[in-house]
Length: 331
Image 1 (spheres, rainbow, N blue to C red):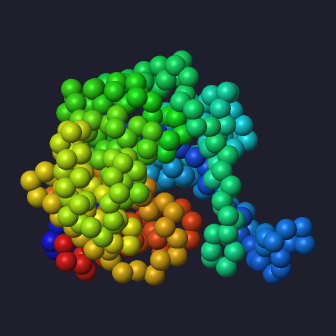
Image 2 (image 1 turned 45 degrees about the vertical axis):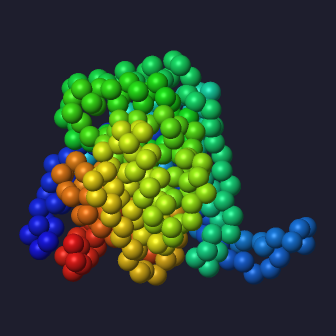
Image 3 (image 1 turned 180 degrees about the vertical axis):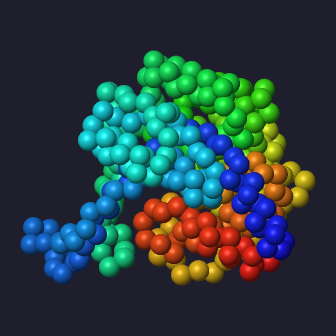
């Protein structure tokens, strides 16, 4: 792949509209210094020097898709609270559409509070609702998504499931059925609760922990033969076109049922792995929609995930850096 080929890929991305459906959240960071232990308990005291809010979860997937030049439309549910208002203000700041954001007065906006000292995360405190959204909210969300599909061009649909209750079985079934009828590719980033419910999708992308817990088999991360066997069996049972398993420091595995491919990780200076999965599903979804080969999809996603791990906190991929490294890599 030469420089022109790489440029052509990003040109394709810039023409795409993507529906991102799932658990959006607010990522809050408290940056500080640890200089002493608490006299009240054997824990460090963090003197806060900076506070920052960022878009997380499905909203971070949207930011990654936006960073790659495509247009994401996020569908999610937030609470009627201060965190929800901050979330909406960040959407405006990042020039992301809020047309698919619904407010539910019975739920909290999901927040991940991270406390960081000397570039290292000390503790994370989560505020969240994990029950499924109400039947009424489910109906509203489904109707809005189907309306968007009927009225606007959509190149790919991405389900981002963090087990916070937005992606219900009924919502997935309704949207996926419409996608199949309209020949729109679908991608899923799953968690445990709905793991076996996802069927008939184009791309299924768990990480290794999610895959092992989901299928209930004790597999070693470096046992590629066992991963291949169980991945192909699960892929056939669930009728996926592609299964793409990220193996963190060991790289990625991808299979289309005909050929399995494993790609080791690109060695990088890892600062923080949070948000890497959001980057991978964003890149992989666009690559799939662009008709790129599984090999290029895996390599590009692997490279992008490594790039964001060099940064502290949840950040979208740097498009120009990714483009540059793709041109200098063996794709």
